[in-house]
Length: 625
Image (spheres, rainbow, N blue to C red):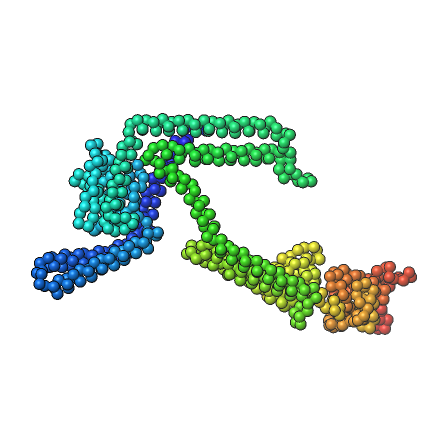
């Protein structure tokens, strides 16, 4: 760590102090205080005008009283009575002014008169004539610095002079400040006593400044600064040395101290990563120690010179003000936080109670007429969302900054983004709610949506997921489910049975009764088809070359349709072959004479022979020819 860093930090903090200090001087006394002082000055002007009127009237009455003759007793008594009324009015005026000042004493802030060493000598609260309290404080500060710069200053020449309504503190021909009746009331003193106190403060400030800024004092302070910097540099060197020692100490023992942090076959942290983490923490501690050293060293340096002693307070304030403000804000927010926690606590157990009720409905321990058990979970989710929304509405006024324009602007912006970007999401959510209460299917039902057939594996507010017979998971948006047709194979299969049907086309030379028996026999051979109700056959059409026979049979295994259809088709082929029925449709041409039948040879009798060709001759025609 280079020793020049403290000087760089010092310059930065000096720059911060100059900007912050000047801004604070204006804001502290001009923003919060100016309204109160203006109101007081308006009231004070009214009382001053009343005092001046009474003073002029009193002078006239006293002059008139002195000019009266001894015989004018009646007029003399009238004048004395008027003078008494003026005195009573003056007493009331003083009482009103004092009461007004007492009411403002703990709220209004005075403007400081700053000494040469940047220390506050006293405060100015009231105006005199056209000069405001701030103007008076600035003028007095400027005059004190002017006196300090006078190489021939003789402080014993500072005196107090009494004028008509004020006491003036003056040096030769220059009036440093005037003290009025109002000034004295702010400090609960007489005008003369306040003038003597302020004179003593001004005199002492000038004397102390002359002593503090002597050449010997300056040299001694410079030496102290050098000593403090050397001490700080020594600590910096020690910290750097300790850091390097810690690095080498840990590196030498890492194999004994550090091991891979793992669970079974997964390694969370290797020993090398742990070492890097420990060294990083030590590095952070080193920089925190540097910061603490600067934080302790700079106020010491600032306190050496009189003109910079207030900078130490500014530095402490700069560091601690955010923490103090945060702690104050947390303390002031504590009642609202307690209200929020109470609301959340009540809503939490209310939601638990509602969840218990809907769980009882779902397990059918609690039955409500017209309310299906599969409605319980989605209805609870909707109710829970409404409770959460109601909870947010209740706690929103207690959130910090909820009444600010920025908070409201951000809320509106987020709402607009949500409304613009989630139109399709809202559509699917509404469709999901409608589907839930329409109850077109349940989990594990075999359904068909459009061209997709499979079992329902998941049903949410946004999508429905279906597993096909090929083990494909297909996600379908609920809006598509709602706008399309849904076929449910499982509902009736569980009740009376699902009808499995397939169509076979057979030529007209096969008797329809024989074909009915063959198809019913094939259905009865199929394992997952029900015997009761009995299978039945429908002749669905009479086409040009064949008759369409549709076999219908009941099953409770809706999820095994592919297997059932495959086995049923196999059995149809076997039964038809066993009964000598050829399946030659839809369009099958064969020259029967001389050709073997299409029935598999395993179903033909052992002595079967292919028929010969039939030839017919017209003998009579040959003879005639």
